[in-house]
Length: 155
Image (cartoon, rainbow, N blue to C red; front, side):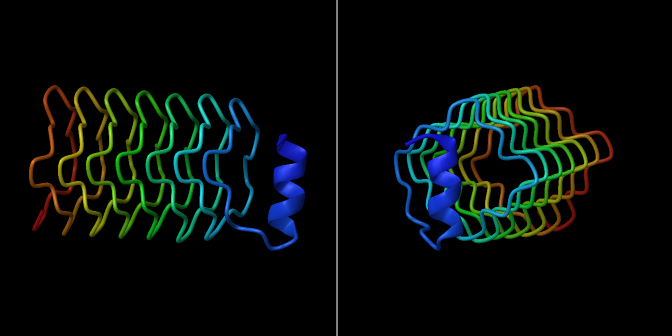
């Protein structure tokens, strides 16, 4: 399925697209709320400003994607590959990010309020100014992560 067909089917009300390959797709500023992209491949995609409220991206490969200013609130990112992704200024409040790989990701100024990051790998991630208030961080690997001005209150 190509990007055009994906967009047409989503616009027609379809939400279930597990294992779809959208490598390098430009879906910036698109509303993809409640979409199921379980185990999908979106490496190198432009998802800047995209709205994924309530979506399931578990097990997806989002390595190197641009998710800056995206809305990922209440999203499932369980075991998702986000290595080197740009999530700066993204909204991830209440997101489930357990066991996800965010090695080298840029999460500067992101909102992760009440997010579940249990077991996530944030090695060498940029967490400058990130809001992790009330986030669950048990077993999270923050080795080499930049935490300047990060809000870790009650985390």
